[in-house]
Length: 68
Image (cartoon, rainbow, N blue to C red; front, top):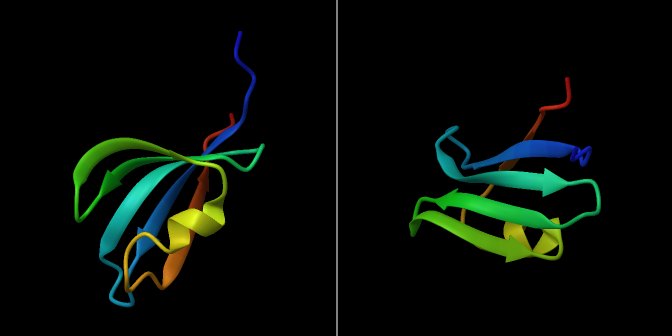
């Protein structure tokens, strides 16, 4: 059984338009599932800091805890 906690994240611009989304793991690594400029993807990043520089105009980093 996989007990690794996953939190969905959404990156938005100042108007609330979604620019990207993905999964943030407790270890700090990130998987980007969708980007406005590339569509669906499966990009892996070692840090959330790298994700914040992906797309110009990101103003909101929204986390959604998926743990039940």
